Length: 146
Image: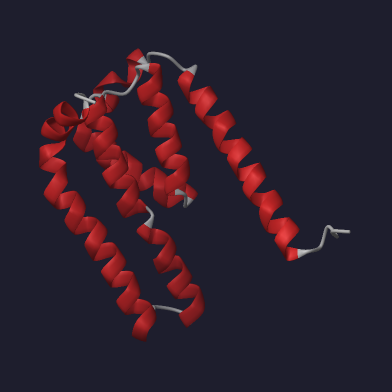
């Protein structure tokens, strides 16, 4: 008989609850429809890039950010180029988690291997965004063919 304090049971239950939460969140985002008052923000890939960095840093979940992005695209509120830029921003925002973990593990500024991993993670995601952000219109046209 499986006990409720079993770590395997708790992990599986947590994943199921997380999945259900993401599905509900995505459904809510899809039903939002067209957001006229935010068109200036949603239609600008650079603002979406910066906004998704901030949002992902705040809620520490690139999965939540990506789910919101997919929901907004599905509802027609978010153009594809802005969505691509937002995913790039979420990838940078998620690097905040490793810095927070490094601070907690190191009792201050990360040092040693912890800092090296944080720098590489942040650097690779930032480099990818710097290279791809100017190309979001072209990437959007290519992806739209499928």
